[in-house]
Length: 268
Length: 228
Image (cartoon, each protein chain N blue to C red):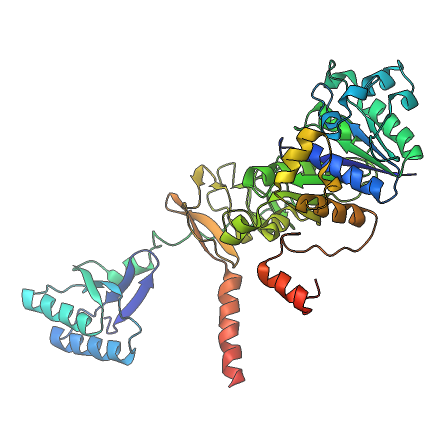
């Protein structure tokens, strides 16, 4: 049985879809069988970010309603052999799918794949409830800003209140600008962790590559010189159980740290 | 008749000095001066109201009194003549905090962190072993004690009990309510890192270091002596 992981945040625009796409791609690159499920029915995005929009024939609602078999609706990725996408319906609404139907669907997918990543819609209404229904793990994406942390806290509370066996939520801090944090203009990751009291899964720096790659439909993990891509790679390895150290302000080492590493003093 | 000089501290108004109303006033002042000198600089900076009992002070007497106090670094606020000062002193002080009423024993213990959007309402006291995050709310008819950080909203004594308190290891609430009084932290106020207690004084919610903190600092002082 594979793991069913929901990627959620409460607040919109913090990078759920980007995280799902990059994490899924990185997990596939590491040899896992991965399926990405876009649970944002009516506002689908994941297919665009993955560059697979023009290959959609059947979507999630078609499968749930029995218009298509699951195998027919799974879209194979352009580059990765073992990466698939189940797109959301664009012409339907969240309430066209029930939590029970979603759970059946993810259970079925978990039998075929190592990782089932669910891209959750923003908000805490029906779409969110459906998306978390079948998940055993939750990745909370938050930006280092007060409103995002507040919403993350709310979502963690709802996740904990769910019935059934569930792992504690894991946090990805996305769009960190190391220089702003150093100046004290951005929330510090330690402060976020103190309040949210969850495990830190990774820290992803703000990166222009993300915008370029999103528009191209090619996740940033494919790009060699993307700092964010590197961070997502590390997160994927952590999800597989590898102990990859979380560097403070990952992938943005200072001149001094780089100097020490080159000279051979730094261990990190 | 009363012969002693009595010096008492009150929470709201500062010091009250009761002077005996028998004997030469100059002699009384001399005793006061000796007494203050014997206390070192303990009373320095104190603001004093003096009660002279059944004595009429002349202008010179008043000035002599003021100068005596000034030599001890104290400021004379007012002089009161007549009445029974001792009886007045025994009357309950208006500024003293009302002692928290013992609770009826109906306490709710919450053993997790309350996150945004979560609310606890309880008829009795509430004890939280965890944090109360922003966006979360605790409402109790009795006291609220948070063994963690209180960052959300707490409403103690919600049925009108003005002696209810809110205590937290880290007291940095969005808003505090006790009975019908609502308070919030002043903007830009630096939060304290020690346990604090909020209660009603007059018509305001005031926040003070908790008794544990005072005890802790007393212990530290003893420890420092032993080190030497």
